[in-house]
Image 1 (tube, one colour):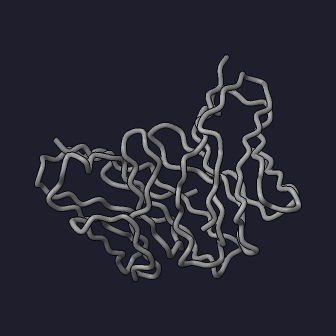
Image 2 (image 1 turned 180 degrees about the vertical axis):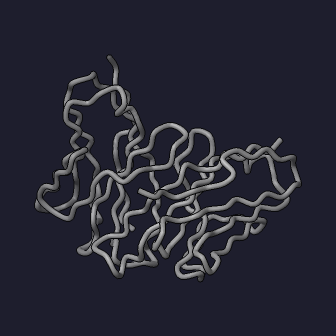
Image 3 (image 1 turned 45 degrees about the vertical axis):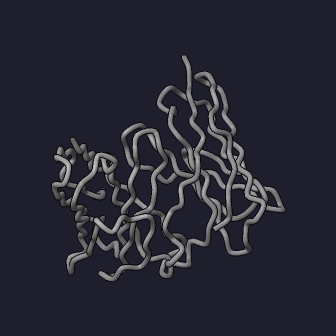
Length: 113
Length: 116
């Protein structure tokens, strides 16, 4: 599984756009990039997954450059309820024996009024 | 939509006691994962099952065992409990990645185990 590096913490204010970048220099050809969100005392929740270019859903956007060695999770117009830990994961989702999630140190995002 | 169910939600035990945590996956999901999250720590993978067979093993102590039953629910059995076992235990389920584009894992609400 490719190692990922992301900031330990970030602060922002309500209504701002927040971008969290994750580095994964050793990403393999079949690897996808997945982001999970975890609120305090709750189980992690899948946010978004992508392979290349840009993916957007109702929660976030994921930008992946051509070399795929990094990715950026973009949260538009954050609110207080977006305060959570965000985990960047890299792996081959179709290889079932590798489908366990190895959580690294996520990014603790704090949103202020 | 149905979610992953875990029981009990809270459990208090004494040292050296045993505990059993239960997990009921989302209907039709065939894979179950167990994770342990200590206070202020990131979730750690313990063990997983696919179609009632153990599929992967992580940092699960020998004092712990788990199994997946014919109805796909899973139980995590913990014996000789230690203070350090106090944590949130999450169960997650997914549909095997070989049959879908990606195997998104759906996490349950967790069981908070406190060992006194």
